[in-house]
Image 1 (cartoon, rainbow, N blue to C red):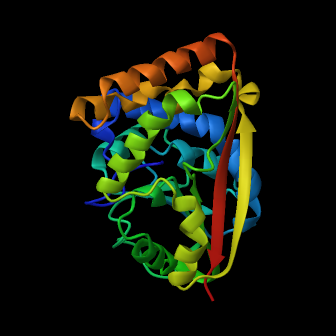
Image 2: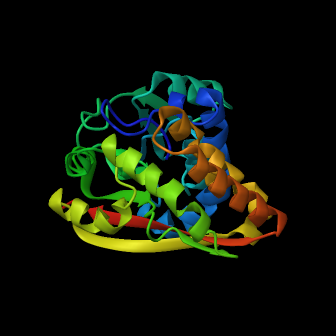
Length: 276
């Protein structure tokens, strides 16, 4: 995901593997790997000229900066909103880009004027929300008539595929991850629920646009380690949520997979809806 959500969400960057510095690096890597593929399906939802775009849950601004560079009109205003001041401090300090303003605030109660944006983008945010319909309704309230809310996220049951298959070795470990996230109010199956979440929030013309990319496109499977390596599960071992044996099986399988130059196809979803 891009950044923090609101109190009670399942994303806590300081508890991720490597602590806050490690999570800052992971977010930058994630943006570098996936943003171009996401933009392919998002581009025609962005304003062609002028207007304003909100990156909701912007975190360190890794995608906010890339979004600003992709917009056709340099006059389009871009705002990054996040609840985590530590991540926002990184955003404000990293390669300042003209035309971006960062704002601290809760996505459920955004401190921004109503009807002020043409596009609101929320990347890898909704999987962490205890009240996704409520947040979608709040973000929709920031849109001008005809504006779009675009939600990018994944589904743990539809994440993609690997050759050779890793699932038999890692199923227990990633099942523990899903259970831990659910216990904290999140949902790793959220992508399949997003169309109805957006409709329940009052959005219309709701549509799903899948996107995919492969390990071969990004320089090999080792480049995906910040996203896919079981090392990301170490905090669950420390919390006692994941057993050491299950973690060891997953890690050994991943190391073999990398050594064999395994292949992965990663699948994500952009779900968009319009306000009247």
